[in-house]
Image 1 (cartoon, rainbow, N blue to C red):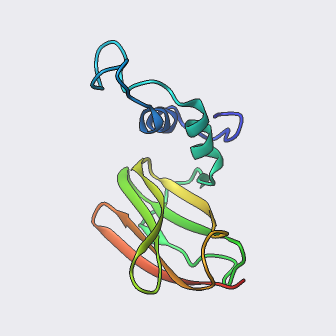
Image 2: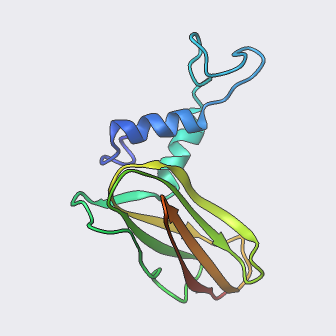
Length: 148
């Protein structure tokens, strides 16, 4: 994971490993003292890192922020930047024009920082989409246009 993202903190790596761990009949109910959070799923863990979330600036932001995606309009991928000034549970998701959630990009506890996510919309149809950031009590929505 560190080879793919050298800025990954130990807490972020632990969070990714726990979040992608698997449980089955062999591990029993997790977490437990033998298997912890379950079996490590290395493929899912690395895929999560490769999927596009990247901490882009070590300087701590002063306020929560959700920037306009770029490029916009886009095809097939765009970048979404956001900043969190303190540790928070972060949920970044994409909605279609009817308000249906079509993708969850981030859903984890994160450390303060400025982040960038590359969103690949290859599987979606052309149209207007909204992306929403929830971090603690902060909530913000922005609009983007996918053209194919």
